Image 1 (cartoon, protein in one colour):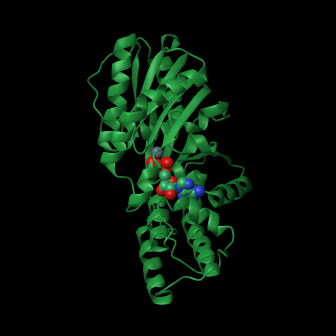
Image 2: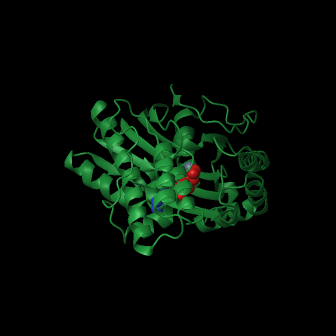
Length: 340
Ligand code: KG4
Ligand code: ZN
């Protein structure tokens, strides 16, 4: 089967072609203009999606060496995300589905991340734990099949990526600060400053990062009222990163032992973090647990994960589902579980 995927839930315009679970193309156009505003400006995001979506889709088809006529279905992200951005992708997909008479498969963005471990033929089997860490989400899922999963833990306040970005702003690093903190940490000492690890000892699988942000704010006000010397900045970055990563890995390990599983998928923008990749691989290998962290282009927001899940859904429910029902609407809010 050949599936065209379209993803426009936030500030990446992406289109991809998946054939028989293999990626033929995955075009991602990131909107860097938001860096000037210290965060994503929804109105600007949707306008840029409108300007470039047809070009991105054409590029994905060209790079995949397929024509729209050869496509068996169109998968599109319809929730959650910025409403204006979602509207652009869903309506574009509805338009080409009608014009070329192709089944249309609405996909939940978070589900796309949850199942992204299957990209590039990863050897992954159900059930498994999925840790989704991005600028908008930090959640743990118990995943039983393509149609059955439940959220078993989530952040009570900020997402991990949001913590990286907000703390980075306090450090004067601009937006998005996650990749910069990652880079500067390599020159710093992670043990120099002791920042709080929110909820690390709680029995549940929840996260909290707002205390860390507040603690860093007061620490900077007290100790660095003017400039931060270079080495101190590196040490601060490394210590803050360590605090975030340790909690993510510790809670994931708790989930793995609670449900007695031996597979974990870590995905979402923050899974690009080099220390998270290192510590999770190191920790889980000690317990014989397989960690799957998709390649960078599949960790950030991308249409390949949307197309792949679209293909699985089309294969599983063809004949049972009406894939020509255009009544579904773009929806900004996330859901917590899926059951058959
Ligand atoms: O999944 P994503 O591309 O977009 C959504 O938020 O849905 O994730 C973006 C987030 C941002 O908060 C960014 O700072 C963070 O991922 N991020 C990182 C790294 N690369 C991206 N955080 C820490 N280390 C990184 N290397
Ligand atoms: Zn995402």
